[in-house]
Image (cartoon, rainbow, N blue to C red):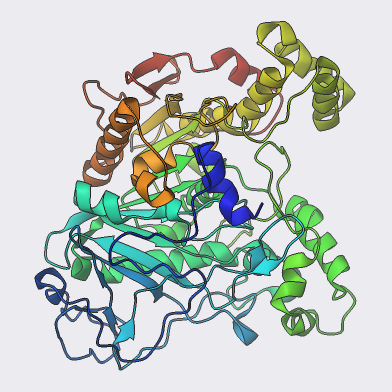
Length: 552
């Protein structure tokens, strides 16, 4: 099965969503590159004509016209959506990161003078389509998608999403992240963005240090550039640049929390939400040992006279397939590509910055699902469970883990290992970050997503697994071709109210309940389930155990 389908399939247990969204008027040709050609675009509407506002910048604005939205780099013709509102797809926010710009900070996108077609997703950044390939995507991938009810002066909250995939996979062409329904039904602007992945996005080596003293973290800088684009263009797209919620899931959550530790991100977003991701980044030595050093050796460039020239001469396919590829596993406790503490862009781990009060101090929502790794772990016997724990932690620490998580406490050995990996990697990492940030000026809100009331097919068991919350938040069930039941509808409403209220006000709201700010003494959280509520003592004993054993 291709990785592109894995997320949607897992979410469904239901069925594998296709790569296209066949909704009326929406073109989602996967991998298509947006054209620079002038277009007639049958996209005119009263709403989009209001988008012919000159948003400033150094580019000469195109002549206004029906269905034309003017950004700071040029005019765009998007998709007029039959249900209301419109979309801009495949919008470039930075120059193609090729040639001399490979392994470099993103450069400004060149202005265009004609009306640019924005009706198809841009390509994914280069990645493996399965653990053994093939390679898909294109290096000219720094594009974003926008959905908005209208390009007017509505000053709506903006929801800016960073996709997951282990910082090695994924893209915004996934129908899971289709923002059409979310934007229209909750009257918000939705922005989703691509960013460089794997070695192309996160390779750090002293030979690649730029003029600012930064090597690596290229993907993180791509996200900064996309946020800067959003700040520059939100008002002309019906959004409020002062009410941008930055949120991400899995590796996207890791990147969001890394941005909370980046001083230059200050002012680019007003609130943040971290879905199932750590806020601790690796130090340079550890990161090099796990990623850069083995990658350079395998690439054949380690002994080259000019390492950057050697790396830039490699094909994208060669780079993507060089080990470590970083092909992710939700249950794996190790890390591959991602943000690291480079001392310049990211001066210190975000967790340390939170404790010191030097992070980007904005209201924060953070949490995890109850059974994060449930879709990533096969059926285990008790002997296999013991062996898996010992393989992950060694004999000494493994014995401590087995004592904390005895098989007798769980329905099956598989459930025990799901609990071990979910707590260690996600649930307790969320608590660690919540505690680190809770003492600062802005409020922190923790959640525990436990809902498993969706419809399953075949012999699949419903669990609150990694990423299960996303179709409820994006309201993307139709785009994924998935059914919903009455409880799903309740959860969709609850997620929408909570996240859009958080974007609008900095305080999340729950229907019929109060979402309290995190209190370490109570170890509390919003319990996202049907019925919704709050809970105290979320895996407290287990997280106390991990606090003494592992970093957050």
